[in-house]
Length: 125
Length: 125
Image 1 (cartoon, rainbow over the protein chains, first blue to last red):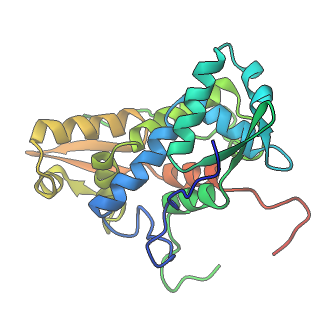
Image 2: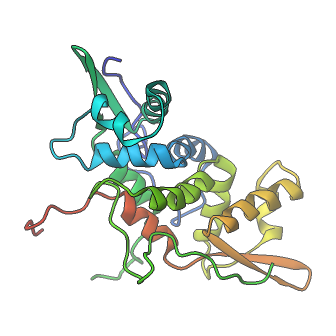
C-alpha cells in the first residue's frame, strides 16, 4: 500500500513524451504498455472511481468516501482500485484506519495527448 | 460492412462535448459509454491497428496493408477491427475485393480531451 515506483505512461526512457497515436504507427512495446492503461480505463466502475479521485479538490480521496457511491462490496471496489494502481494511473497511502488515493501527476494528460491528433507541421493557430 | 450510424463518443444529445474526467465525478451512463471505447483501446493489437489507420496520410487503409504487419490470421485481425468499429472508433467500406478502414472524425480528439485536465477557471496562458 506504500508509494511505489510506477512506470510513467507515455514517456520514453529519456523522459521525452512518446509520439501520438496518429503521428506514426505505434511500436509493439509501446502498444503493450499503453494498452494496459486503456484496459484499466475500459470499465465503467473504474472510470467512475478515477473520475471521483481526479475531480476531487486537493487531489486525495479516502476510500471511505468512494465506496458509498457504488452498490458494490468493499473488496470489489478495492480490487478495481488495485487495477487502476497497477496500471500506473493512481497511487495510495494508508493513514491510520483508511487508505487515501490520488491520481499520479501528469498521467491522464499524457494519455490524453497520446490520443489527440497533432497539429499539422507548419500550421500555427 | 456499409457505413453505419455510430454513436459519437463524448457528446451529449445536444452535441455539446461532455465534461472531462477530472472536471466532475462521471455519471454512470457516461461511464458505460466511455468505458466501451477505452476497452477497445485496451489491447496492443487493436492499438497498433488504430495507430496504423490514424497515422495514414489520406486517412484510409486497405485491410490488405494491415494484416501483413502482424503475425496473426486474417480472421483474428478482422475480429479486432470489428471491435474497434463496434466501439465507434473506426468505420469501413468494401470496394471490390478489399475493405478500407478509416478513423471516425474527431473521435480520438474527443477521447483525448476527456482525459486531459481542464485549465483552471480564470487562468490564462
